[in-house]
Length: 118
Picture 1 (spheres, rainbow, N blue to C red):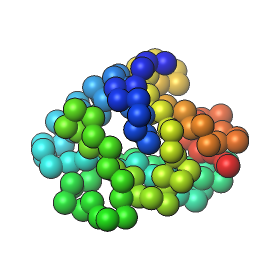
Picture 2 (picture 1 turned 120 degrees about the horizontal axis):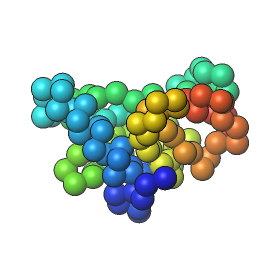
Picture 3 (picture 1 turned 180 degrees about the vertical axis):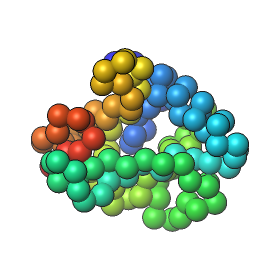
């Protein structure tokens, strides 16, 4: 697994994940986007990860913002209770590739790696 860009943040982001997210952001054609990461009920193990681009103007006082060389990751505080220390990585492997979540708070993770329980 790659090293985090900045290791003292609540949500860690590998260099490879940052590179891929920045590529996806540039395809959106909007420079005012941040990446919102959170959790919701559902998935094989009870809770599933969610992430999507969002306009930076939608950030509220209820959000924590993590800065990676000017790119911002946003997480609501309720989700952060489940995600603090999360490492978001990216793999371009043919099988099992994509974004990978390594969550130190998860007691159980489903086989696909997209949901967990605490």
